[in-house]
Amino acid sequence: MKRLTLLALPALLAGCAQFSADGGMGDVASGVRQEIGKDVVKIASDEQAAQARAQVAALLAGPLSAEQAVQIALLNNRSLQAAYNNLGISEATYVQASLPPNPSLSLLRVAGTGVANFEVRLIEDILNLITLPRRTAIAAERFGQARYRAIGDTLRLAADTRRAYVRAIASDQQVGFLEQTRATADTASRLVAGMGEAGGGDQLNQAEIAAFRAELGARVAQAKLRARQDRETLVRLLGLSGADLAFTLPTELPPLPPTLDTAMEIEVEAIRRRVDLEIARREVAALAKSLSLTEATRYVSMLQLSGIFNNETANPLTNFDTAINRGGAQIDLQIPIFDTGESRTRAARETYMRALNLLAGKAVDARSEARIAYETYQATYDIARSWRDRVLPLRQNVSRQIMLRYSTGVLAGDGLRVDLFKYLADARVRIAANAASLDARRDFLLAVADLQAALTIGGELVSGGVAATVTTMP
Image (cartoon, rainbow, N blue to C red):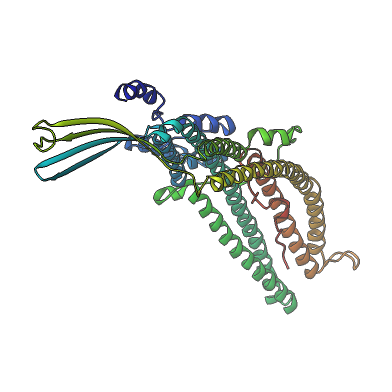
């Protein structure tokens, strides 16, 4: 048995997995770079932390672009670093699973009536040794899943950061627009008040303009609160605090592109690139190996081999003052009388079939999510362009005419005269139109991020898209 153990030991050690130099981050970095062209790093030392900090500081020096915001999040978000720690834990589990089971040593000493019996047993779990290659293969699949989960967590953070970036700029832009409108209303209010003091106005006009200013004040307060909330969402994703909170954003959303990307095989792209589908495929592969192992060990769940050495001291009554040494072996196995392994086999088979069904369901969901994301991408572009090219120019023309007639109301004829009520009503409509146009451009940029997410990570799209509510003046 000793010779057999020595011969088998090199083969067992050769099959053991080794820790990688980067903890599996090489595959994660290449996968992320392929999808979004960004660098990722697992911070495991003070030197790496200092390098990441220097990169973040450089990116924060000026107004952030969307790409810079994403890169900061990938370098600075601690939840992402925790996801990379999970990858390291998975690698440790994989290496542990590839190691042969440690042998057990049993010592026994019995003494009495002038004789002592000493016994040593070296026990090895033969079943674990036989099944080691299969269990290692299962652990390798699990480690592969962990790598794709890390890629998915990275891409999800990038998508969430893009959405938060768009919302933060849109909210600030809404505040600026409403502040400008309130300044105009303040000017009109002072004009009406001056006319009243000179005897040229009436109390109804003053009440109308006061109510309008109050409405605008409430809208500005709501917009400022929303802007603070959206900025803090972005701050959390970027992992910033302290002096870094003073970072600046562009004053306006990026303009609409002249044209959209050409149509692609959107469903094929989703099936090929989706990280959640690859994780599900690896789950099926791991469970297939696990089912095969369960079926192979259905009737034998315990098999141990023991090498025995027994020493009996001298005893004149039995061995004429000569110590007796004995050697041998022992095999222990469990007899499948009551539990024949049927329950374990059925559970493993059902678990495998469940994974297959979940994979098929995810494939259906992936195709659907890709289709609706692309349709939303096209629809939000058409809506935003319609607001920009048609609705706003027409609304601006109407407002110019109303402003002209209102400002020259004393000189205009009765059919052309516009009163203050009409002027204020147009102002409300104009504010709503500008807000809706900005929301439409925001929704398109969010749809771009959602489309990228639908092709890579999946899951429920949360940008709002065409379902976003347009706030209007009462």
